[in-house]
Length: 413
Image 1 (cartoon, rainbow, N blue to C red):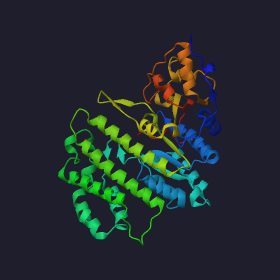
Image 2 (image 1 turned 120 degrees about the horizontal axis):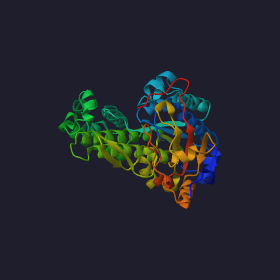
Image 3 (image 1 turned 135 degrees about the horizontal axis):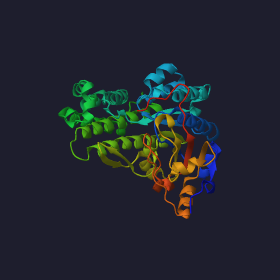
Image 4 (image 1 turned 120 degrees about the vertical axis):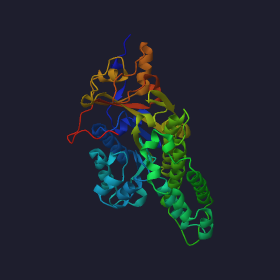
């Protein structure tokens, strides 16, 4: 008995359809993408997120981009600080600022906030660490920002005894020591296990302890935003130092540890957002970071598996976390042609809709009833859905044919 796509419930990709499919309004709603660099997919994201903000009251949008740089974007959309050109150039990592769809999202967020009270403004957040595929940033910015925050709030002698500013600068040294791209392939090039880095990890831990103790001067007050940013600085500083430590590791588990640490940093940032914004958080990233099941890929011919950020967040938030995977039919300009009919993408591509919101659990049940077991699509250039984990998705956003935008294909990172 063959699976018939007509037996699967589909809806338009609209806010009302999403909440109807989920049966609830989750505190955190995550939308994945199967590949980076396609503005057509980001256009679908923008339209859906706009409806969810306007109709369902979500007030934070978080993207897979550097959490520290994202503070520039948040300042712009909430207060108008900086120009749109500068924010797109400096506020995104991985080249995402060059995307016309990301530019349109930031422009709309600023327009949405214009004239609104601070309590009702839409916020932006990056939730990735300051990490690239080729390495990691220096911990200088996060450590310095954390120390500066404490300098206005704790006794100067106590702070100096804990972490003298000159000692911090001496131990950090030149940033080029930390950002050497060769360290990703050659652990001996990393400074992460040097005596200086080891001392920095201890200093960072002591600074976090001071932050936890919260001994402010009576005359100095801080806003909730100040406290949230200090926590972000603390998470980023300790996370980066931990990442650099394992970048210098030469064991067989090195790469698995590094990709796991990255998703752990992502999860910590998402959980902080979920705790800070009760109005709800919309998240967009690669399916592999947001899915509930373990993520996997091959690096240097070897399989690497780790728990995704989505699996960690879902475990903590339970029913307050929802995940919509995105699946695509074709990306012909990348050589991704019509998917085989016995794959999830092939089943959906056989339907009439150009775009649709699909009941993932219903699709899994229909496949089970039909006695069919779809295989993973063999196409390269994107991450196809694993049919064994359909039931782990709360829904599937399906785009039948992905076409390049008029401006041309975005850079893939």
